[in-house]
Length: 253
Ligand code: IPE
Ligand code: IPE
Ligand code: MG
Image (cartoon, rainbow, N blue to C red):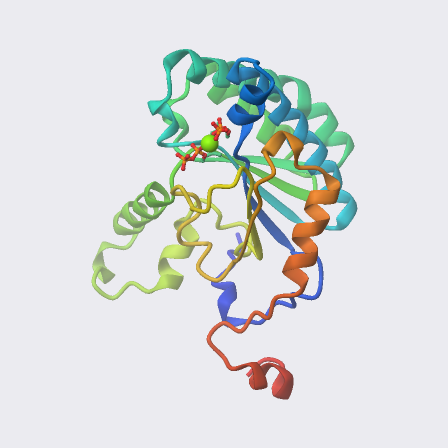
């Protein structure tokens, strides 16, 4: 299996559509509250918004879409909200696989799935297997995911595989064990809902990602909103430590 190593060594162009988009889909609860609806109504709308976003990403030529659906900290929410979120997840897995296959979308779920109920775990495995040969868009759902969890599970697996070299491991040694080892690092990170924080999402992988925050609540985040985020990304100059002059001189100094 080929692994992507740290993309910060190369200079991806920011004038083009981001190859890998990472999104914290936040604001479902507030969307519902504004309408005097239960929070779960916002999560239902959130699933609709994700379905639309997959379609728009396919259309715009985004190659990887990685979304935060449930953090390792979200277990702290009221039990009824957690269980409704799990039910929604089950329903979405059952209903969306066919559409993903029609659209050539490959699904992966990253995170500590061992805490989910066995039905959900088997639906995830089934959906991943059924979409495994699709090639237009890699959709990754982070569920019971935490950036610190990811780094620790990778480190523990590296330690088990290569104990003799402990003390001299490099970043490149760790990267194959990280949950997102199949994808280049995100080019653009979007957080909806107005909060400006990472909330323990992809800590390692966001090292040099461009950040975009919007007050728009996730259920309202549509094609026009994504295009605004992409337009903002295309204004950025990604230097990865170099000077501005170096970029125009040699391209890849
Ligand atoms: C994001 O929306 C979805 C999940 C965390 C599952 P929220 O539920 O956090 O919505 P707000 O932030 O309360 O509006
Ligand atoms: C982050 O949203 C996780 C997801 C969107 C799944 P939260 O709404 O849980 O984040 P915090 O806790 O307010 O930072
Ligand atoms: Mg929130």
